Length: 394
Ligand SMILES: C[S@@+](CC[C@H](N)C(=O)[O-])C[C@H]1O[C@@H](n2cnc3c(N)ncnc32)[C@H](O)[C@@H]1O
Image (cartoon, rainbow, N blue to C red; front, side, top):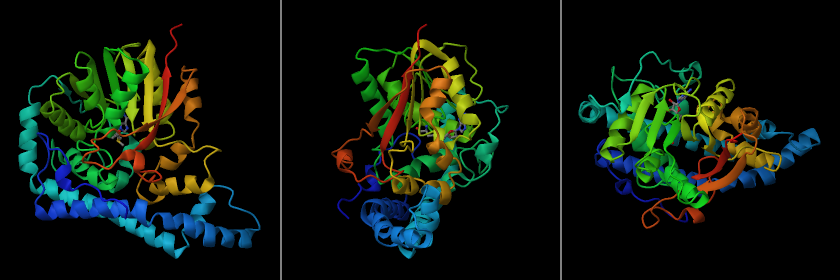
């Protein structure tokens, strides 16, 4: 292993942070290191086994090379090295969920109590029990998270949000920074560089979960009205309390679907999502984009941060390895979504000039590994594409 993730104690604490005991912190430390070892360490063996064993075997059997990422997956799934690596990776995810759930459930009374103090009577948290959790979100436990984002251990709790927050450090090997907000921090940097002096008045974040990546925007634009929507109440309860404790007073959490955004046409200057589109069904995704365009002001910005879409320029092996989560980590829409022509979906929704730009997590490099030296994790790294467009004014 070339470098080691920072310890769990480097994760910044906020008013809602679950407190790890010695063993829980030790397990997260193990998992952060293990994940890094699986990606930057032994992960490279997948490419070698493909080049030296699986591809030659495929060509010998079929007298041609694989035609797509699915054929590579079927062939690789028979290879002992890849099976071993894949089983370790799946297990690391299950262990992460197990540790996070255990840590949260043992202190759930206290966490719910803290959330109540931050949330009770605040107009900045708007829950609407009439909002349905979409069917595509209920079908599986997304990335092995028991109960997905909407599950409750008991009515009105914050367990799903707390579990999501406390373990993301382990999954990413510390790649998202002390508050797991390296994506949001990168968006702020990007906006300041791209449009110096721009002061958006209203920003909408769709599928905000606990608000990791919208809090940096709320803090960077304190005079703006910032709305974070999500269909899952437990993550909104937790996210609102977390944001309040971090001083993001201008950030409102609203239970609402991106498929039916309850704001007027042209209301927002900036409509954005972070690592969200890949969890939408094929029907929901274009609807969410169209709704986003509707509520966007002419001249406003739409921006989606995601792992790079597959394209003809991306080698099939790279597409295959990036597809791992779709088949092994309960991400049912990952593969189809990354195969979409996202630019076309955005153009069809009324944004003719779509741009794509690379974005890396912005983190405190004195504590967290220098992102520019990180080995690409093929699907998990804090290295994204931003798919963006300014809405035409006429
Ligand atoms: C991968 S998470 C997004 C991560 C988050 N944007 C961040 O930056 O940390 C996906 C989120 O989308 C929410 N979601 C799924 N379908 C939705 C919809 N139609 N409208 C709003 N939120 C939705 C889920 O409840 C979940 O919290």
